[in-house]
Image (cartoon, rainbow, N blue to C red; front, side, top):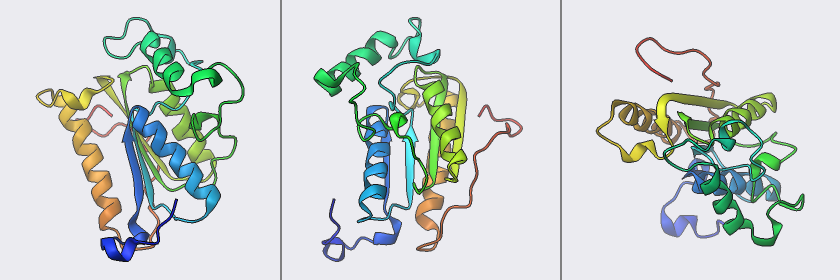
Length: 196
């Protein structure tokens, strides 16, 4: 992971973050771990949308068969396809399944969003909790009635709120002055008129 061409690209190395959705969010979380461990590129933030981060499928939401989108069988297929022979073994590295990381300290601030009818709900909640316990500001939003991939349904009110939440947070991260860490904390209360 190098950053030697940032001047040519016109990119500000103090405002680099990672973001992804589903498996892409798992890759983004793994990249945040790798960036921290290598110390080469300081990340400003990580935005994890419905993150696929735990191959072990131990939580109640990851065991659900009744999900319309991405049930436990789809989840298992995804992990088996990604991990190959490592699937089901203790040898899966945390860079591949970030929930396996034992130390989350020193990671960049996070925004984690997920629907309450998403198989990744419990993993997302647990990861946000662990980030906060490690001293990493992590803002968590769980949207009532939102399935996995809710952003595809742009005519549905919950999808619009989900997208607006992401846009607001990422905009704040990119607009903040260089080098200033996010001071946002994990949201634990439900604002009036909102379902997250």
